[in-house]
Figure 1 (cartoon, rainbow, N blue to C red):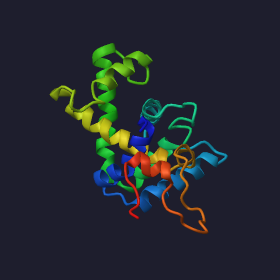
Figure 2 (figure 1 turned 30 degrees about the vertical axis):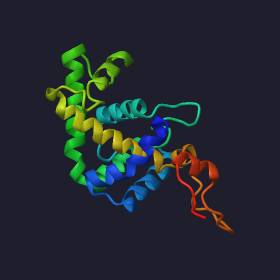
Figure 3 (figure 1 turned 90 degrees about the vertical axis):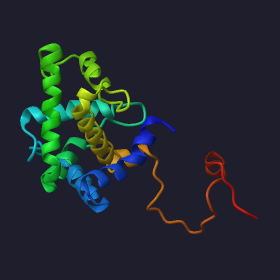
Amino acid sequence: MKRREAVGAMAMAALTAAFKWTPAEAQRAATLAREAMTAKTPFAPAFFTPHEWDTVRVLADLVIPRDERSGSATDAGVPEYMDFMLTDRPDGQVPMRGGLAWLDNEGYERFGKTFVSATSQEQTAILDDIAWPKKAKPERSQGVAFFNMFRDMTASGFWTSKMGITDLNYQGNTFVAEWKGCPPEALQKLGVHYED
């Protein structure tokens, strides 16, 4: 299983558990993000400050960058999705705002600049210290908690977007005239079989 597939599979469950958001709320935010991206006027965040907005856009694309299969998190409208989710569910606002401030503080302490103005190597150095919870130092626990939340929101936003659904090659929501069971290659991959 590739990294994108694994993160996509965990995204909705983790986000729902962390913030008690229902799948319907996440889907609504994805729809609103799609609409915002097709609007003729630029999107104006309701929750994020301009600096936070810049940081969210950079960080989301570090979590899910553009590749040969699809666009990046910002291409899919993930920052807009996050803004809608945080506006509708204020219980996530303090952890988000605090985490973004934590990133800037790390950037200032290590490199004398904000996370957004840091080089890609400097940004990666900060993220490498918080992206792997079991390897992270205890003094970085706040950064770890924030990054876990941010990564889950990014994945949920991406894989509920039209781009993310295409990236997963999702085959649901289509009419099936006759169900013939799970394809043999999928059964083999799962290591199961139908009983005769």
